[in-house]
Every structure is written in C-alpha cells, then in structure tokens.
Image (cartoon, rainbow, N blue to C red):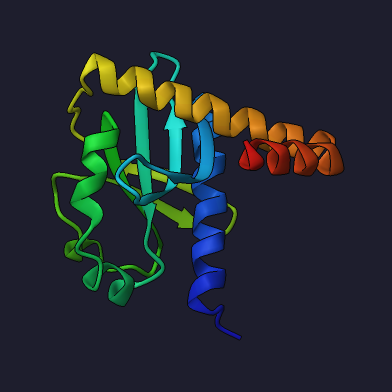
Length: 155
C-alpha cells in the first residue's frame, strides 16, 4: 500500500534528518521562523551556518507552494528534500537537493551559499537554542515543563 502524503513527508523528513547527522549538522524539526513560516528542518552546521530543508511529499506539494523562497531569509543554504520518485526537473536549480530512499538520504546537489547578516544569524541561533533546550526539557520532565510553560504564559 502506498503511503499517504503526510506519511511520505514524515519518511522524507526522517531520512533528511539522518543525512544531517551524517554531515555533522544538528537538525531541528518544525521550527517557527520570525516571519511566521515554519521550516520543516532547520539545521545548524559546525561552521555556525544554518541550513533550511523544505520537505516535499510530491509534485503537487511543490507546485502549490509559493512560499519556499521566503526561507532564504533565515538560512545560509536552502534545500528541498524529496523521495526518489519525485521528478527532479520540477525543482529550481538554485536550491540544493536531498533525495530520500527509505530511511536514508543523499545530498544530490549542494545549495548555493547566501550568508545571513550577523544580527539575523545571532537572533536565529538564540531561537534555535531555546527551542532545542525546551524540547529536551519537555522530554526529560514533561509535567514540570508543562507547568513552567503555563506559568510563563500567565506572566
């Protein structure tokens, strides 16, 4: 049975995150950006640069998405992650390409670099660290973290 589009997207995202780990990038899923957009994966590279990976579960998912250029403002490099059945010719050449097959993925085309301004990088690094630490705290102590979040919202 063929996986649904959400299931396919989850498999691609998982494989792309595994590739990030192999490349020594620290991936964080579902990152809300200051623009209000949500990056499927935002990864921090060892050099301090950010990579945004936009997961596309199929051609229709890509063709109806006009917002992907907005992610360039919040990453030094932008990639699409797709599965092996995705027609690569649909994707713009000025974006990197990651192709997932099962639980693994391969970096097929590197993304052009467009370095972030220092102030935006610093703000993004703070957002990334806060989100990652919060998620870890929630895993370590779900009840305690929920109480802390409730208290912070009340202030």
